[in-house]
Length: 319
Image (tube, rainbow, N blue to C red; front, side, top):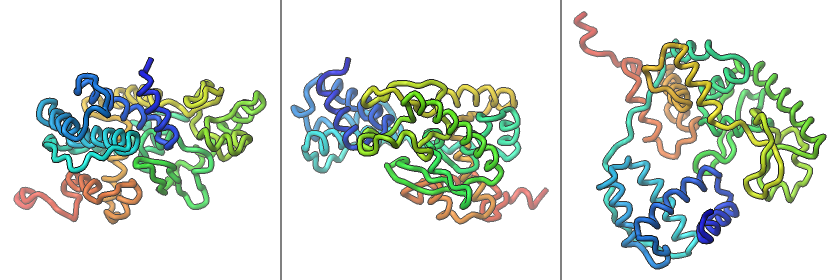
């Protein structure tokens, strides 16, 4: 059972509309910080302790720079937003372990994995690759987020709590329409029992019949109903990402690609890289992926090889 202090943190993050994954991540780093300061209350600590903790992560734990940034964000939330306590200039030691180059598949490798899948499972991977979505962005899609006329998908409250639009592959339209029909049939059955898809708590209070609206149905609903994480009401959530990871691991093995590190995010990496290979402007790719900083998108230029800007190895001129 979490301490009263951590329970208050959870309530505060829910009021601010933080995603469940963000809540879990922030709680993880705040717990680690509290253990680091010998279980003192954070109000009895301050900037010096935060600086020491972040330096410890970099110097002793050898974490990647992105991991250190996540820990920093958690502690900034804790002090600035929850405790209303300014930290000032921290000046901590930055992590030097850089982000690794992403694993990218060839077109044939993507095709070979898709060929191992059918139905809903194949469609999920098609959407990950065809639209460049993160796994939870895909599974959180609701019917209202898919625009078949414009061949677009709207990602709501993505990473950084931003909305964005990305492309929808025309080849997935028919399968996606069938999946939505099945999802709406399941919602109709749930509605007859007074149950519907999980909704943001504030929206459910303001619009008590929203759960009956087709637009709020999840495109990829869970097979079972469960308690809402905020208020405990019975509802149907979206499919859990562990389901996708399990069937993808089997498909990768069946395709003979298990020597390569392939996971759900690999399809997003491949989406970006293949767009750049085909001459898509890097700013467009940045917008489709939802990156704040162009330098984040530029990492894909390092895995393009000879396809990038027509560059070929000088050895090819000798052979």
